[in-house]
Length: 177
Image (cartoon, rainbow, N blue to C red; front, top):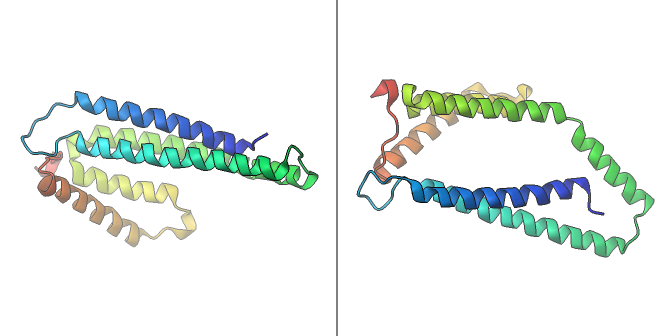
């Protein structure tokens, strides 16, 4: 029987494939407000395509791992292998509370980001969001506020100007505009 981790990989791959297809199909409902060749559907379609490709890679990798494990074991589970599999499950369950907390905080942070973007603007909300997300996902002992600030500001400014002048798409200016 495949390990618990591989079953989770299979489920994640299938769900992400479905999500990417749904995302791509929803882009056909976007209203085009500009006459440029790149419209509001470009970035979501690109993202959906990336998720689709990476999900396929995960799916094939999981299936290949199952096939290899089945071939190696040829129907028998050795005592050492069973202990190793059990150790992997215990190791995965150890930081479970922290993972759920991070997922909940990230979800809340994204919702707050979406709510505040029209009010504060893309540059401010993206900079703050990235900084807080870096702190949330990084280990407290390795936090580097100077690096986080630099990356947050640089990323927000580069993305803003790429969309504004490269794709000719306006992002919310908020209090800056």
